[in-house]
Image 1 (cartoon, one colour):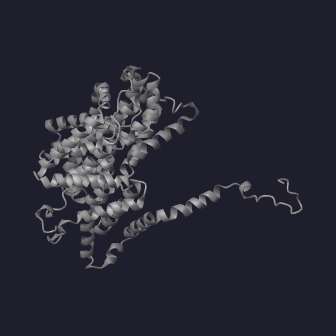
Image 2 (cartoon, one colour; image 1 turned 45 degrees about the vertical axis):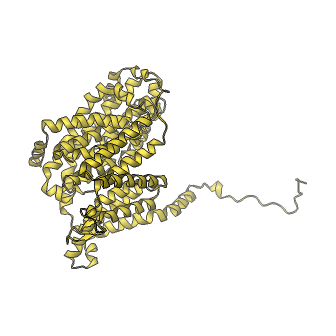
Image 3 (cartoon, helix red, strand yellow; image 1 turned 120 degrees about the horizontal axis):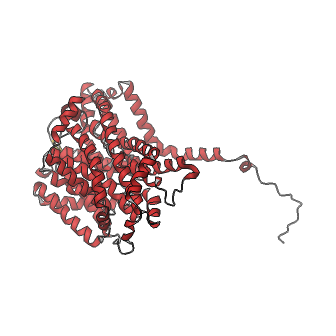
Length: 519
């Protein structure tokens, strides 16, 4: 393990650290821009990384990932506008503090808890990743197949409101993933006799279309932000008081960090739900002494520590199992694929230096966040005032240039626009596009492990159930599939159990000889 960690330092060069620094700054800007966020920002700059050294490319994207998580908290506190979905809980007490003239207290607490959670999350990644790596290397192809199936089901249920629509989107991603050269027998399939699809369905237009063009169409219909908020309130209170409050409420910080590590390591769950869990946990722990919802600094510390602590652990399943722990991790996983690295067993076995290089970038980026955020809070808040009629065209032009610069094909631009329009209508009708992208990335791994398992078993399907671990995974898969059918009966049972005996007393019968008083 020590040798692997030391090999990771080979990727920490002056240029890669500078790209990490630029990524954190850009990530904070993307996080502040309402509706843009980390995944869209990472996708926007993905074409730029294609011609870079892998270490510099990953440093830039990791910096954006880390910076965007914090950036969303600035507008949540100052304007009550979450820059990211994971920043929703910060509005509950961050904005009341701003209304009380204590915005710098809230911002200081947010910066310190974010940096603390990020560093502790990176340490958790450093400790837990070798354990997951051993597990990944010990799995056979059949077990790996069932883990990917289970991950797709979990993501389809966790991302979006309707599991059936999530599964349909995932199925579409699996189908797109079969286009191109067969991974085992090197035969072209579903290419429609065109060289354009011979190398597979292009990943970059797919990602930029779904998370770039579709998002710009959505933002284009939203109203411009600005004019109704007084930015001078950012001068209220003391930043140092907020920083010291994180140390004073160390139990709240530790609790939020632990929750962030757990939810970050679970594929598909992510900190979008974790920050609410952390806020509720802090509220329960405070009891009657808390003034949550009225400007309690602990309502800022807990969700912010959770958000940043979830970033690094989300890379645990991404790197070791090839299963993205969050949407931003899925974009980073796409970057790995673009640079010829396959997340999972092959990455653990053959490229341990890359894995620990990413871990070191996570730790260094979290440490850089503290001084960068302290020096740029007021400037970052001004980005929230950029009108949508300026923001959307600028980002759209950058997307077009980005996808064209990859292979210099107009077909890529047209494909990106077409995918963006389809993804926009998918979201409009409740079909979340995230399961499609994740299934597209995992599809080749799913197919390869299934066919390898069948080759080992001479074509016998029962090889997929040849070990106790396979049976455990199959049972969990079946429970996930049957869960939507069991939700309503389980809810009815819970409702009956909650009824009191008084609810079961039948109404008194009406005597037949009782006169009718309504006449």
